[in-house]
Structure formats: structure tokens, C-alpha cells
Image 1 (cartoon, rainbow, N blue to C red):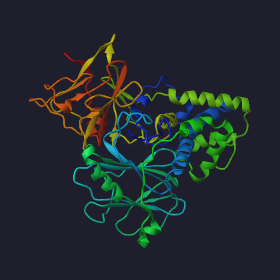
Image 2 (image 1 turned 90 degrees about the horizontal axis):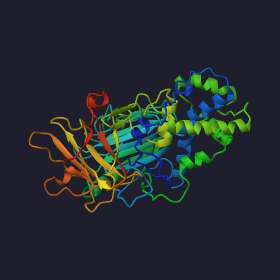
Image 3 (image 1 turned 120 degrees about the horizontal axis):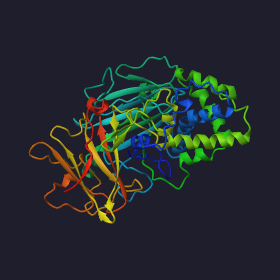
Image 4 (image 1 turned 180 degrees about the vertical axis):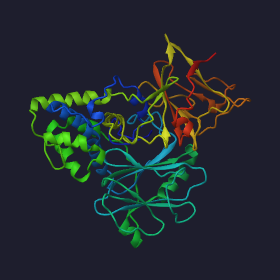
Amino acid sequence: MNDNGVGVSRRGFGLAAVSIAGLVACGKSSDNSTAATGTAESGDPRSIATDAYVFGYPLVLMDVTRAAMESVVPVNRFQHAVALPTPARRDVVRLNLDTLYSTAWLDLTAEPMVFQVPAMDLGRYWLMQLMDAWTNTVHNPSSVRPQAKSRTDQSVFTYAVTGPGWSGTLPAGITQLAMPTPMVWLVGRIQVNGPGDLPAVRAIQEQLKLVPLSAWVAGKEMPRPAPEQPSGPGTPAPQQVAQLTPRAFFDRMCALLTANPPAAADAPAMARFAKLGIRAGGGLTGIADADLAAVVDTARQRIPNYRDPKGRNENGWIFDPNIGAYGTDYPLRALVAWTGLGANLPQDAVYPTYNGVADANGVPNRFRLHFPPGQTPPVDAFWSLTAYDADSYLVPNPANIYAIGHQVPVVANPDGSLDLVIQNADPGPSVPAGNWLPIPAAGRFSLTMRLYAPKDAVLHGNWQPPGLTPAP
């Protein structure tokens, strides 16, 4: 949910590395409210309005986030992250050191947008995630599954993102990615193999193309992408949504419904919400302001406390295999948006998260993570393990090691097993450099294991990450 992204930072509007899977699986309650299926029959206006807030929260948050980002970077234009994070960066939580991001907000109202992924060196992972206005991942072409019917050459992929109702003809060699809403968030990720690899990734980013279809056909070039902007002191998008008056929230929701209609499966929920005037172009009626304030308070308590009953806890590692495409599970959709916009589909990446305590009465703990032979994370791309402190920031350490498993290769034991040392102190030369991950000396910490293009064994629960054990 959540890597350097995706989502909204604590300050400003950058990409956030929120561990969506962990937070989804660790909700404080199992509030399987009637909004989960959209089939509730309760006619109580307070119940209807509460469920409508949960239903509409992702849509409103996406629009507020879009507006904030477009104040820095124009619509239909890429913005590139160009550097790897360090512990000094404190505006974003759960930072990702595995990929650099290239993001763009698309407006498909006037015409489709064409984007092109350039040729890359063999084995470099990339993912182009397209989310609709409701935060569903609708398309996810990647180096593992490019989803392209044709190519302009052996390794360049060209796509046209089309809005609802578009029925034109595309030039040969372009793969259509039809979206159900004109508001689209395109989040691209490109594998980076450490600081020395940054120039190569930046060169790839410079070759990414994003142009209107008419400009593509005419052979016109668009302005150069914008560099990543540091987060400013502006109000974060989630806080902006929280500051909306209840009626302002529902007014914005109704306005957004006009251009970004919900899915057909949402019809029962929308019919219920319409009893209070909550419809495309409508306005909230039939509920007193005093009741409405209580409704919003209830909804805003319900969202972060929802727990997906399908979430997994395996050997202390928690993740949710159901994020990214939500169907009618409106509480889960709202929770993931609340936690951090931009959750991947599980087939693209999963992020099991472990929460632990770094010390026992002031004495630093030492842990071992042991993978039996043949049981390292099964992926079609790569995997990594990153440590965070109690506040979900990278852990400062003299060795400047913040993640292992990817940038510095791990070293297996003679029998093919793998031992990773998780502790604050340098374990010394007996442990290969790539097998030690520093954690804080005291207090709480967490680990996130990122599995890119996980194999079916992960998705179907046939493989589980091993638990941490005390080191001898």
C-alpha cells in the first residue's frame, strides 16, 4: 500500500510507503458493516449517510490528492522521482529503496492519452499501474506481463489509455487500456539496483512518453517531465478531506459521481444512497446537520478500524491478498485509501509486514530469519527486506544498510538455506554484508518484505515467510 508509494505523505503530497497490507490485516475490529456488500436494507438516514461516506471516501480523497498534485505538476504530465531515500527523509513513511517512481494524473475527458515504455536492459522490472477514480487498479502492464498485443519493436511497449465511451481507432502497434472513469492515476515503478544504477534509471525515465492521442498521431513532442518536488508544508490530502464539512464532502462526492460513475455492481448501494439525494449531480437531503456531524464522526472511526477477515497472518507476517481491486468491499477500499493510496494488485507485488520489539529491558534483541533450502521468496522479479523504526522511518546506522535481498546479493549457506541476521549491532565478518539488516537498538520496529511479481505459491498461500527467531 501503500512502498515509496504509493500514497500521500504525512506532509505534502508525495508518494508514501505505507505498509497497506500490514495495516489492513491489523485493524482493531472486524466491522463487517452493511456497506461491505452494498445490499443493506436499513432505511435509517444516519445508517445510509454513514455507509455513503465510507463508499465515497476513496473518490473524494483521490480528487483532493489530484488537485494538490496538479498544483505542482500539470495534468497529463509525468513527474519523476530521481533519488533513493535515506533516513534523513522524514516527510514520507515506509520508504521503498527498490524502485523509482514516475507518476502522472490523467484527464481523459477530451481524448485518450498515449504512453510508451522504452526498451530496458533484460531483467529490469517495471510496472505501470493505472487506477480509476475509485482507487481500483484496472490495468497493470509490467515487464513480467506487458499485456500488449503488439509492439513497435522487440522491447518498446505503447499503450493508449481511453476513457469511458471512447470508440475511435488507434494506430497500429498501440494497445488499448480502457478505463471506466476519466480521472486516472498512472503510477510507474522501475527497478533500481542501488545508487550506482540511478543514472541508468533516470535515462529510462527520460524516455518515457506521455502525449495526447492527437499529438501522438501528429508526431508532436510534449514538455519534458517534471522532477520530483520536495514535500512542502501544505496540508496533506487526507487532512484536507477531514477538514471538509459534512455537507461539503457529500456535495463534492455528488459532483464527482457525474464524471466518474460507480460500477454496475454498485447499483444497490447507490439506490440506497439516493434516498438521501446522494447521486450524480445531486445533493444531500433528509438528515439534520447535528445528525450529519455524528454520522461523519462514526464513519471516520469505522474506516481505520475495519479489519479484512480475509487478511493473513503467517508466522507473524501480515498481509492482505485482496487489495487493489475491491468489488463491493467498500470498507476495505476505504481503509486502503485511508492508509495510503496506490495499493498494488497482489500479482504485481505483496508486502508482508512483521512488527517486533528491538530490545528486552534495554538489552538489544538479536534475531535470525532462516529460509530452508529452496524456500526463499518465490518471485518472477525480485524481493527485498527493509527495516523501519517505531515511526515507520528508515533506521539510521553507520553501515548505511536500510534494505537487503536486492541491491546487495544475499549469500546462501552451503546447503542452499539462507540465514539473515536482524539486529542493531554489526555481527562482524562472519556474516556476509548482504545478510545483515540493522534495526533500532531499542523500542518497536517493523520489517517489510517486498515480493515483486510473486509466484502462485505466494498468492495461494502455499508459501509463507518464516518467522523471526532469537539469534543464538
